[in-house]
Length: 116
Image (cartoon, rainbow, N blue to C red; front, side, top):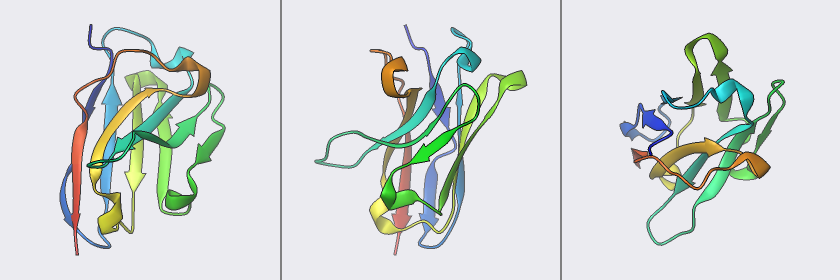
């Protein structure tokens, strides 16, 4: 069962921007703390941004000030706005529940590639 569908990735030059989207037709994302994760080649998957049910947000140090997570409850969608992208942001990005709301099911993710 695929709970999350990610989109919006692509190839961008260093310093550029992308906005990722995460939607679900299976669950109501509004009911969960949600997060964006990324996994670079040869590295473990890491949480880069999380948003609580009431809008509280938290970010990994590496992306603070550059990434912004948000949610649109009417569209059942969670977004990740990524600005000032760096080559080290290159990874497959996934969404899932954040913190103790994480699910075992992962989507296909969306590839983000930042070239220098």
